[in-house]
Length: 114
Image (cartoon, rainbow, N blue to C red):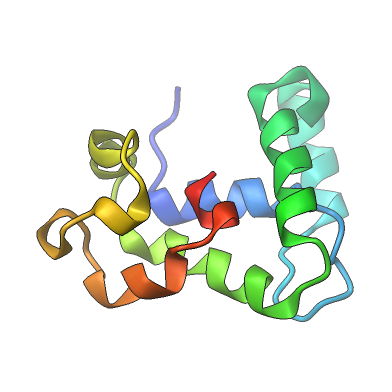
């Protein structure tokens, strides 16, 4: 597997979430999704598909929810750092466990927890 920074992984997932695409903070990109599907198979064939479906329900067409979930990209610098605390709710994380503790209060909602 290719190592990518945490932010890139978060944005990769959000690019696959289509409802709310008309909202300014949406990151849905049909061209990107098509290119990735050509390389890796469609999202429904990967675990990403289920995550995208759940995020579609949780984010819906709520502008602030779309905006806040993007803060997750800046919470950690690496996937390893996120994985080290991933089994715990965001509200339970200590400031010293994240790179941007100021974002924690903004991320305490269902979509960010996913």
